[in-house]
Image 1: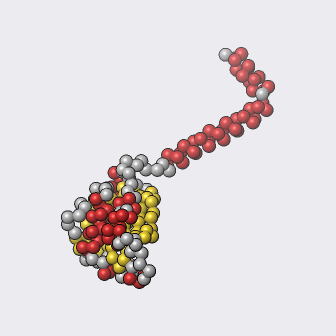
Image 2: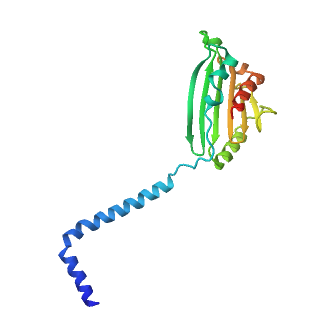
Image 3: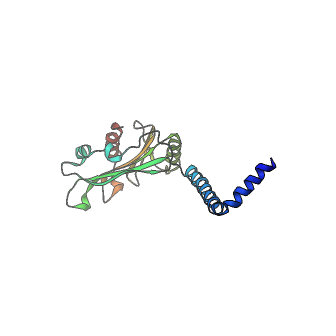
Length: 191
């Protein structure tokens, strides 16, 4: 055993220069790998279990034309952007008339859960974000309410919360529940 210890000691003495360079490099590499793995573990993206909806896929140009006419233009087309366990997508159309003060718009915002945690978050925020004095709506989605002050219909269905607005661009308070339901039904039929 003493002989093995002496050979190791002699080896280290003979290769002192290589050890003085190699040991710090190995330590830096090991520390770097540990730091990278800790960072990766703490910053993993949530697992996508449910395909997020794209608002302009739910209300296509052809569908928008059934509400707004043949001169319909697409002004907003935001594909899903992930924010934690949900994605948000927006789409908007206008009747394309030159007088923008009298323009009619159809807009949809879609908040899709990408996993079970996202469903819980969507559901909780749908319920907690519901203002007082809004009109509950039945027969569309799992839950819905119309916010007349904003001219918006909020609908929660399964994994998705959609907000639609259909009517006057200049004065959304003039939007009606009936018109908003038309747009929401177009969007929900696409799911």
